[in-house]
Amino acid sequence: MRETLFIWTLTLPVFFSLWALMSLRSIHPIVRFSNIIGLVAGFTLSVFNFINTEPTYFINYAMGNWEAPIGIVLYADKVILFLIALVYFIALIVSFFSYERFFGVYASLFYLLLAGLLGMIATKDLFNLYVFIEVSALSAYALLATGGKRAYYAVFNYLIMSGLTASFYLIGLAIVYATSGSLNIDDIKQFYLTQNNPPIELLTLSALFIVVSLTTKAAIFPLHVWMPNVYSFAPSYVSAFIAGVMTKVNAFALFKVLIWLFLPVIDFSQIKTILLVMASVSIIYGAYMAFRSYDARRIYAFSSLSQMGYIFVGFSLGTPLSIFAALLHMAHHAINKSMLFLTASKIIPQDRNQNLACFYNLFKRSKLLGISMFISAISMIGLPPFSGFFSKLFLVKASLYENLWVIGFIVIGSLLTAVYFFRLLEHLFSYSIEDTQQQEASAELIRLTWPEKLSLALYISVLVTFIFLSHHLYHALMPSIESWGIFK
Amino acid sequence: MIPLVLISALFSVGVAGLIISANLLKKLMALNIVQVSIILLFLELSYKKGGMPPISDLGTVDQIVNPLPHALMLTAIVVGIATTGLGLALLIQIQRHFGTLDASELKTLIRQDLNNSGVPIDA
Image (cartoon, rainbow over all chains, first blue to last red):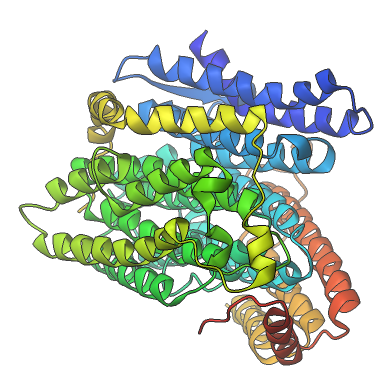
């Protein structure tokens, strides 16, 4: 029964993407609502699956009853069920905020992107991972390119860089497949572990190709160059979903392949050093560039770069506690960054004046948006009792005995984050406006519709209960993470 | 050995074309060349001298070519086509709105467009 529900959560978006296209012409409100019912159903199924499974639960589901190495195997344990529920939650929040646009081609592409991301999380076959990476990337290109004329060149750059690195992933895959003969992660690992002389240099080369490929898609310094333009020029509600989820799922796919396949086989110290250096520089560079930016969405983009650095540091340190901290930071950043982009979607007009003056007078224009933006910014900085504090606390705890330098980077990163977010928040509370056009724009009230209020309610309820959530997640996820082995 | 050298030469031609060319359409074509070289890499891996097609009564397992890399590369070809189609659609829109497909001209044009609409430019 649980495996049926698991498969339904993965395949529901595909059916609904077809339904959204079929119901393109209808303007009946019930048909419009039926477009979003897929997300609601998927979210309830995935949360039900996560809650009703014991911490040592795992399942290997062979698609079409073709067992490995012939068939494709989907794998779910508590961590993967948690990530599926997180992706559905972000999709629910974003789609409720863009409810009046959620039909037709936009909804169809959204569901396809969701299907690609969920497949990336759940698969255990290397080529299936490539297919889902490309499905999600192509849907993302099409969604991001609806942002008007500035978005086209930025998305074209993203397409070229992402296409090139997809070819790098295939080179890594070619080396692994040629030396082992199978595409399933478990089978390849068994094959190398029972072999006398595994070709370690070749496998290290393959791991490097895959690392380069997936760190480009996860936007880590120095391969992040496509990201700030794409997030700034795309429509804000699309950026909310892409910034909230897509880079993180690519990072998780990278560490899934590294920890499950390459860790038992090759010597990891150099790759680990490379990843830690890239992640630490991302933290500082992202915060510095956000400090230098004056456009709100560009600040959010560089802030995403910085927070992805934290996630990468958590994954690269390799102890089970640091991996849990990285997963918790993924949840925290996904929820808060999506809400920041979504409030920006109500405030910043797409093609007009986009500087920080748009945020003047926000509390008078809409109390709910002002409060939610304030809470998101405070949570991103890392002040208790919101989510940022707990994820950074776990990261500090994980690096307390052996890697004290990580704490230095976390502290410096948090201070710089505080600087640019406080500069952003200062505009929320200031009332002096020079320009007449901005004066008119800042006097009009923002009216929130019922889906937007619902999604704000969901967001705030998750955020204020995050202390209980993190405690529950610790006990729920640690057995699965410990069964993965230590990434040293 | 020689086919692998040729495949890496083709890959290098594609990547060099991606870096050197200023026209966006040429960059897209260079990306296609890179993808073709990866397809040829997989086909080279499955090559067998005097191999027979994978039909059951044409030979033993040692004589039959492994069909799996060919199937994987069909998927990769489709992904390449979709990427190229999307890239061409984006190029049509860039040409329509900016009038040029040259990367350096586009950089100045977009910068001017951002300046005109008041979006603050940072570094």
